[in-house]
Image (tube, rainbow, N blue to C red):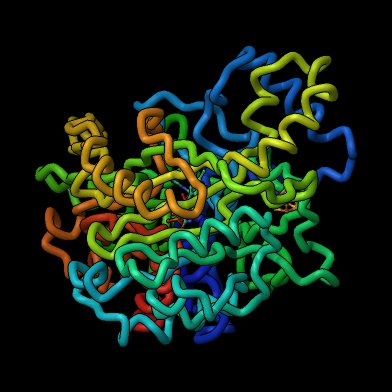
Length: 479
Ligand SMILES: Cc1cc2nc3c(=O)[nH]c(=O)nc-3n(C[C@H](O)[C@H](O)[C@H](O)COP(=O)(O)OP(=O)(O)OC[C@H]3O[C@@H](n4cnc5c(N)ncnc54)[C@H](O)[C@@H]3O)c2cc1C
Ligand code: SF4
């Protein structure tokens, strides 16, 4: 059997795992526009992070808050019009993600024509790839029926235990909190385990966070899987050939028995539009994020120099379905604002702030988020913004959280909220425009779309665990 997978991010990774399971002898071509050698270089030089911050300051100047919404230096702050160009590294956006993994609810899955009962076996399979760390007995994990936690939770700052206790007040059922459920290596004996160096926002030097490119490398792909650097223009749906973008005449691949499209929601939608020639517009969603500080004014708790700098606690709200990721105050936030010479003197102050200051990031459902229109125009896909997020819809949720946290000594500074340009949690209405069944992912005979281009909307919960589970389900049925 001759198979093609377009993309090498999370969705493609899940498809490849399923191919290895069901068709181990198949020949597979993986098409990705990124340079293969740019995959997840592991810097071992202790100077690495100093160089990262020097580069950032040269490029962006001194600024607070940091000028980019993506982690690591490798992602440039991209203008809106270019945000679909995500082919900088094999592994796609998992090079930069926060690795939070929560399963969707039945309500979230309804638009996909699926239920938790149907998707749970695939969540289970994907959990074997991601090795999710978390506390399976937390109120959060129990409410979300998160039965897929396989590793010890991330070591947290004491302030987060206090925060969870304040949220999980037995008198309130609206919010639940718990340790982040995160695809992070927390096994102390592992060569890639988290060292709590606190540099996550400048890119993990140790590959402790799951990245599909490094995991693919570790899994030692059989020789039957070939990586081909190429920018895919479209798929010839009749002949099942892949048409590549290039200078001069477009190149065509040989025909494949199956093609799996997993180029990330934005690019997969564009490739599908070019392949089908569909004249109808597609709506693209991107979850809005509303950020706000939380200050602890109670009796002192210890801070720490060693910490995990991404979200340590998750809070979800049952009424709105919103997710709040709570981050420690990270060195990254101040370091980008001060000259490098002053940094050694300021660093101890930041350690102290970690015992008092947290950052909440509230994700809104796509109904209240950024919205774009994608349409085929003269053979290419034009993308225009059609809606700004409704940040005001976050205010009642933030106010209710503030009331809940107050007796525990936490003050939510709701007046200091700010938005971000993108969360990179995309979904599109491709299936509706193309009249395709979201359950099968089938664009044409033996051609399947396997990522969030099939999702129709984006619930507030982080999408990638569900993207991978659904990609596994689609690949299983197709193979
Ligand atoms: C800063 C940040 C934090 C995030 N945090 C989280 C989180 O905590 N939890 C969570 O669930 N999600 C998070 N996400 C989102 C998550 O990264 C994405 O949902 C996930 O990576 C999507 O996987 P994908 O395989 O669909 O697409 P991608 O990861 O975008 O992969 C697409 C692949 O296709 C390739 N490609 C694209 N176009 C073409 C083309 N025309 N031809 C050939 N190849 C092409 C790209 O090079 C890439 O390898 C975060 C994202 C960012 C940026
Ligand atoms: S703290 Fe962050 S950067 Fe450091 S090892 Fe852990 S995940 Fe990587």
